[in-house]
Amino acid sequence: MASWAALSPSIVEYFEGEDFYRCGYCKNESGSRSNGMWAHSMTVQDYQDLIDRGWRRSGKYVYKPVMNQTCCPQYTIRCRPLQFQPSKSHKKVLKKMLKFLAKGEISKGNCEDEPMEPTMPTMEDAVASDFALINKLDIQCDLKTLGDDLKESVKSEEKKKGKSSEREESNELIQSQDMEEKLDSGEPSHSAKVHTAPQPGKGADLSKPPCRKAKEIRKERKRLKLMQQNPGGALEGFQVRCQPPSLFPPKAKSNQPKSLEDLIFESLPESASHKFEVRLVPVSFEDPEFKSSFSQSFSLYVKYQMAIHQDPPDECGKTEFTRFLCSSPLEAENPPYGPDCGYGSFHQQYWLDGKIIAVGVIDVLPYCVSSVYLYYDPDYSFLSLGVYSALREIAFTRQLHEKTPQLSYYYMGFYIHSCPKMKYKGQYRPSDLLCPETYVWVPIEQCLPSLENSKYCRFNQDPEAVDGDRSQEPDRLQVFYKKAIMPYGVYKKQQRDPSEEAAVLQYASLVGQTCSERMLLFRN
Image 1 (cartoon, rainbow, N blue to C red):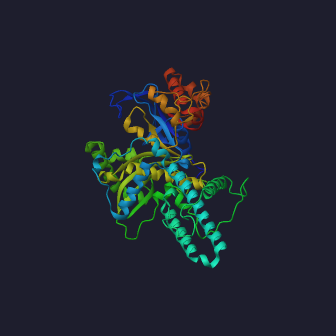
Image 2 (cartoon, one colour):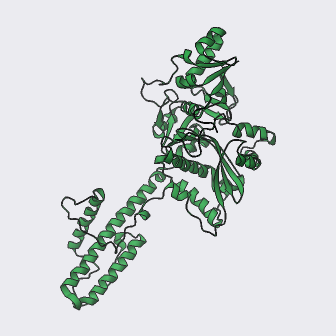
């Protein structure tokens, strides 16, 4: 692994002009257009800056769609993991995995018909957990108030009647216990009724509080709500009373929605049906774990490509697999302030009972985890491994953030609104789309109305805004020519070719001023 101080600069070979090729989304034979370059080597910081300008890699080939001309505009999308909350459909996938691992249960229904990625979440999914929490808190407040009132009634009766009212006190205690059982069961307050008939000559039915008590209940409810807003001390108009902690112990955890980590890393019983683990392996044939698992990983890739994408066997060879998913231009870097795994390209392998069932190809960069590709065993499609792996990668990003605070985003590649199969990426909220003209991030909710009207959109609503890193001084661009590094101004004097100058200027405008000064442009 390269030391931080001895890193060599990125070396890229730009292909002038625009490539026209068959679109894999709408199947237009020549509708997909992009600019591209071959990355002989690249630092993780340079690649981070490039993907923040709409570039993306496939192996060592780095490309940028011509957004206003391509048939299916591809917008860079990133999720904000620190604010991410799993939706109802996400939780179902995680619970399905836990049930399978613990008991070997397989979801009912036709597994082959289950989509790999669920559809866009509804508003119900987005707010269901919040509403559930609010409802639980309201019920807890109501029941706690009623419980306090019952305890006060017991004390009042005991003072008035002393030992002669032992039977009534017993009845009150029974009521209190009955009430507590109903509180623990989560039943709403209006259903917590005590069916104890009053004894003759003993007064009103104690199971039905008088009007005065109902008024106190409303006051108590208001007081508790104000206490939640101001837990520090006394509230205006109310006196805070000490509450016996042993009778109604608080249940803080039960009223909080489970975090993503709680759902993923829930402990399994010792008698679990399956053994499951996730391994992070550097993409390097010098790494013994990557090398030892290569054959099994390759076989899984072939099985996936043929079953899911219907690729013929001759297009799933070892050469294609290596070039596409095992060759990375990113130099492995391990700075002291970086994550424990370092920066670079990795295979996140999902092992079930001693065999690989899925592999997520990812890049760990200074500010994000970038998802490259996923392939999995079609026999386990019922586990929704596409969704599961995305949730694991979001959790992994949060884990890396704990040591490396600036690493706080999860890049999901391209969002293609015009392709229904690619719209699923918008379900991982909150997320942002990259404006293709000014390269600023805009929340996806603000972008969707425009995308409904037009395939290509400028998301930045400021008409005065421009590309803040546009190339303004191309002469400062670095060129690697005839085994020598020179400024573009020197190279230009040696070439005197108008077409070459146009290609270099196009390259500088696409990669931006920062990268053009830092990277070496290889020219023959």
